[in-house]
Image (cartoon, rainbow, N blue to C red):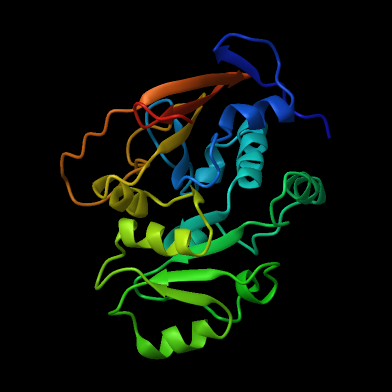
Length: 253
């Protein structure tokens, strides 16, 4: 299959191959704790189309989505998004596995699911077919029996009392050598990360469509002012789709 052409607008440049795209997203110091968040929205700010973020996607967005997984130590996703988007095991394609091994990384990133209520099926393929033992991040108030059942197929980490504390979560992951964290949603978990001032980078794809009113935003939850300035790192474009990268100000990414 022919890869969709992706070109750099900021900084200026021509079409980019996979190596050039990966270089643009690489964090200079892999040992530094770094949380990247990845989302897509329509031009008018909708986070979903027909209820799913995948409905907004394009071949270029999927290409970058897959490349970003190569760079991380762990992929973190809220349980609601795992269910809604139909996630399976965190298993990369052979070309991605080869790239990671060539760069001194494990074949696959760890898959970490965030769930306060632990409404997860231990017999799901996410756990039974996982190439690396997954992690479940939960809270002290989670149901004990569900915690015990999931601990058979995953490492269960306690990162809060009733709500997951992003700072504690990141510390627990870093203690396992998982410093490069890649979050794929969902909106409520993203709100928690913003409130905790935990976001170092956001990769936002803008799909060239209007969805109209009714769809959720990429961040959801109780109304609050949580303004966090971000610096524009680059702008990529492919057939009307914009791929934006913003980083926390004054970083060395």
